Image (cartoon, rainbow, N blue to C red):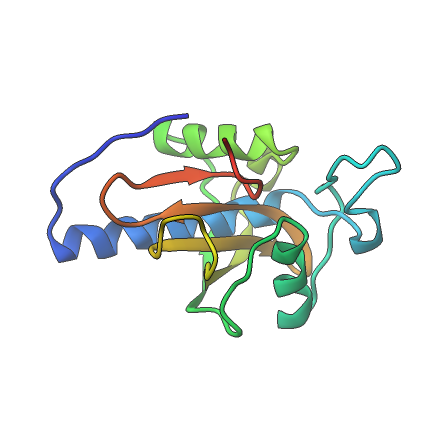
Length: 159
């Protein structure tokens, strides 16, 4: 896990949040998993093949991990997953690979990034949950803390 802290201006924070949202959209485009296959018979969460065609299904996705998110997304944007990954994208894709997703398959593809406010993250109020979707298929996503001592990790709480 990579973590860092920096003193940022409001403009830099907004640019950073925009970048994170873009990366999240790219991730959602990469992998998909059928909703009924989210939890395997062994109890392990399976993301590949997950689909979510509406807001209710996207919110239900987060609830599988114990997250309560805002009723509506705080941001929805169309993004293009880059053809060539720079180090930032490689790092972001590593987060995706850790949770069974891979944006490499979606290079150059258009995706939708849905970002929600997380309402029950322990001891934080600045956490956003994002899903990157290609059509109705999940290809990536993450949880991101946007404030001081920010972080980014997969859907499951890392301890």
